[in-house]
Image 1 (tube, rainbow, N blue to C red):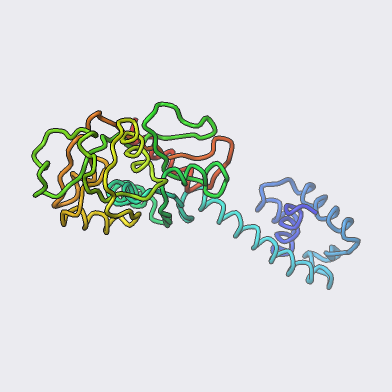
Image 2 (image 1 turned 45 degrees about the vertical axis):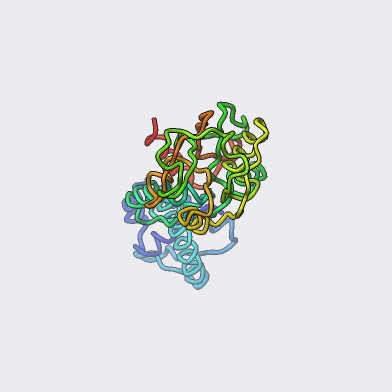
Amino acid sequence: MEFRKLEIFSRVAQLKNFSAAARSLHMAQPAVSIAVQKLEQELGLRLLDRTGREVRLTAEGKTLLLQAQAILQQVEELRSTNTALQGLLQGELSIACPSMLATYLLPDILSRFLHDHPGLQASVTQAGTGRIEEMLLADDIEVGVITSSEPEIDPRLDCVPLVNEQMVLCMSLTHAWANRKQVKISELHETPMVVYESGYFIRSTLDRMCEQQGVAPVYRMQTNFLPLLLSLVKQGLGTTVGLRIMAAEEPGLRGVPISPRVRVSMFLAKRRDRPISIANQAFMDWAATQWR
């Protein structure tokens, strides 16, 4: 059974006239009559009494009209919902992001995007970029921020560049190195540090550079809780590594470039072969226009 036949039948029943229904539906009158006849044949029921000057519903027709109106109302609601989603009038943007980027870059990005789409809501999950990449490839999430210090990106991922930042050594303003122009990795040997736990890109990069030069810092604290890490650094418990944007935005923190210098690129990513929600795709498309 076609929804169009139910729509035509409902209009005839409402207007009690085939010609008036045809004009209302912008159809030829014979086409309206044929549609109703085919509906009656499909159901094996006589729905309309055509003997008088006005078309009248039979008892079966009255029952079907109530059902048809309910069905057509549901179809209209479904169409309205789909139109709203396509127009980004409602829905949820869901993104996985590391805490550092979520703290210093994402608020500005999200506020501008959500301002343009007031019907959208946003959900942000915190995770390290390595874990986020694993979740993307496992289809556990649709969109997330990944990190790389190399130009190569997994070919299974479709990426939008977000930021390219220098990695710096962060310290309190009273630290002995606070006025330095750079700090060599070799100088970190046996110095106290407060760092992310293993598995975070920044930590992995630090570990790799230290290993290459035979350097062994003293990790006084390892935590993924960024406010705690920053508080301990400001209190002078040790230095940490982070992106230049963190040192620039955080009061009481000084960022000194590390030698050899390292730049970290961050990307908004999704699976290349996976369709994602309209809201998430719109966010990726919008982000691509911001950093061209």
